Image (cartoon, rainbow, N blue to C red; front, side, top):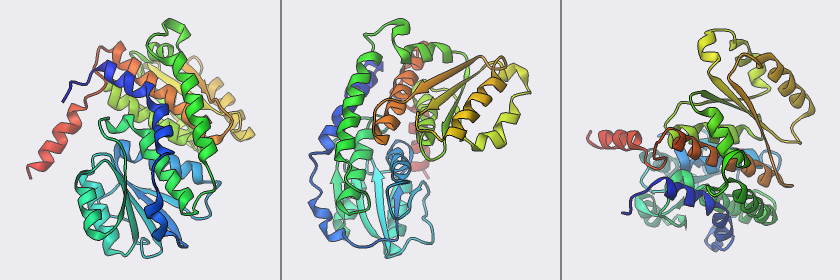
Length: 344
């Protein structure tokens, strides 16, 4: 396999909009037999393979008539039964927790289909007669969010769980195409928002704040991307919940707080009271933390605005890796953990 470098990750990021365009061309006809009234949808995955489920959960919150849950465990909730649509998502197709969850869903009688590039998940699905939506391989899972979200969402459209969303997916691709021209490595210095953020985060402890029901998934994504790309700790929380606990924790220890950088993800449609909370909260921590950075969404549709926040974080985390002279692509600790688990 060709060695993956920082340039590899940058290329993955630049090509993200094409993942949405490719997803629109996928064939969902095999899902025809899955059309019926479900009581809930459960998306099961881990890490980069789970983020598509989280984006779907947040996006569908005001659109779907049934609840959508994300499962990150070996086992699954007791409520999963024949009235449940269960989607197993694993980019590699070999994620052991997802394979275990699939087996549990089969035992509990759920309707199951899979989204993957191959692996054991395809073998099990083929053996059981369950549908598989195969997506292109060759990426690291965290760089495949378009492939891990858009086919999932389009499947929900096909099954009547979500209303038509192809226009929003097309707009999302267009917004990201415009945004990448401002964020790619050819744009130097402060003209590049992601580079500027990365420079501010260097040597700091990143804390990312989003809003419940919308940018919470973007905040989670920022946190995970900083972990995996920059190999650095990062934490996230959401408004208004953080105003009932975390905001009190900015007094001690002053030495750590002063090295924290707070990133606030903002959307013009955030609840007016939440917007006011953001302003007041900023005034409380100003002068106590190293930096406060605000990132504003772009686009018209909810999906485009959400992904615009995610995309800036993807680039910023990669530039932060470069600030630390780290190759953002490998995840050696995760590989080691998997190898150790395989020995048992």
